Length: 199
Image 1 (cartoon, rainbow, N blue to C red):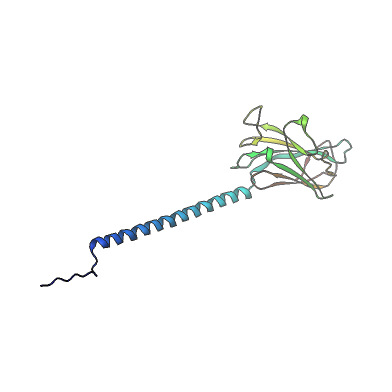
Image 2: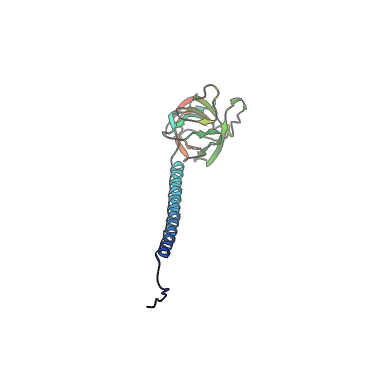
């Protein structure tokens, strides 16, 4: 009886090795695919959250907008309004917040920057903030936070912005994060020493 050597056979050990190799490759491949999927999902969430932050305004107006007339009674001297955070809004750095005033009647506009010290303020280029309520008490920081209220005064006459009786003008508040908050106002027919502006 002769035994022939058959090299075409496939032993159990070889089959196990090949099977383990296939399983390992499949596991690595699936791990890479899952990792890429999780990464893409995380990036999509970040984009959505950033978009919502940028698209929604993080502040709102509280109460009325009050204006002061100049001594001759022909122009508005300054405008005062109070700001607070919108519900769920992130703290706003007022030091990086710009206020732009646009007067369509004569096409003039001016950009104002934040100033805390009234004695040093340049009324042509800066706006002054008086804290109605601050979480820091008598020494507030530059951040408008939840529950805080900041009274903002913008000096139009010092910036040579001519807001005459019946003129429409727009005040835009531009925080570092979030959408610009526009306030559309109309000067009354008669400029008084103190008046409430219509929105």
